[in-house]
Length: 410
Image (tube, rainbow, N blue to C red; front, side, top):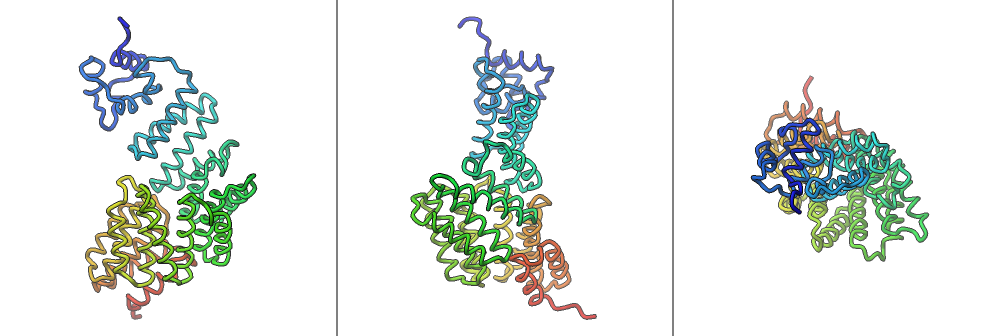
């Protein structure tokens, strides 16, 4: 239609109406010069660029592109749809977080409780992925308090919240939350078999880590009762995964290896590289506990190849930490020091203390293998301060410390 407003004209009008400069709209891959060229009609805006610019103007990418008038509630829904998709596709976390925070502010000002809860659900998942578990708990506790957010409709939100509780040394709260979810899945008519299996296996993970092995077995029995005949491959994978973890805690490494390898086999038939990489990391840890560094190294090589670039902080750190242990125990302590230090830098103060403790433990073993007893002793001390007494790692840590570093003479 003649005289219709172009994208560039609309962009300039909306920017000036809001008192913004071109530099106010810049984002990764979108420079002020690029915006200037769009406004002057010298450059066509890509869909990706429009999605980055639109939230800064308080509109949707669709409105910026077409000029169609959409109610504010629908605008927020479009933002949140885009944000959820971006999270799944591994979009830039900083841009995504900024857009979500803006969406949350707008929703709260407008009194749009549903949009606010949706924004918090995505912000919580993003925070957990980045290792900021305090922020994840803040967002997810608020979001899961909404009446329409239930374990049956938003299972990921509840399991992520439980994971963040565990990362903050709040395992009893994680178990309590997951047992409530399990109860709701069992009470559904008919019972939600996939949900029961999912929540029961997660309960078993925490109970096993806490040393409550009998209760962990009971949780796995519940999972088996409802997931044994499931056609969903992920239900079967969770069952093998939980069996592997419990068997490893019990010292039955033969059964643990069989179970985790079956989970790996099922995951190889999917395109889920994130979970496949995690399964290899679990298999590597089990092999290390069994003293088989050769098998551990093979699983680590497989995990490193397939671990996505946007993998969660915990997964990237676990890979480096386990690589450090393998290097130290295979006679490559300098490589172990490099991997352990990289893990410590990667983690910063954003991940849970137990994982940071494992990184210092790996560094201690690497120093010990180099004969640097003073440095090894200092790192073992730091690890013992971070890894909680009675956790799944504490006994092994003390055994390694006593075996590898001679006691100081008085």
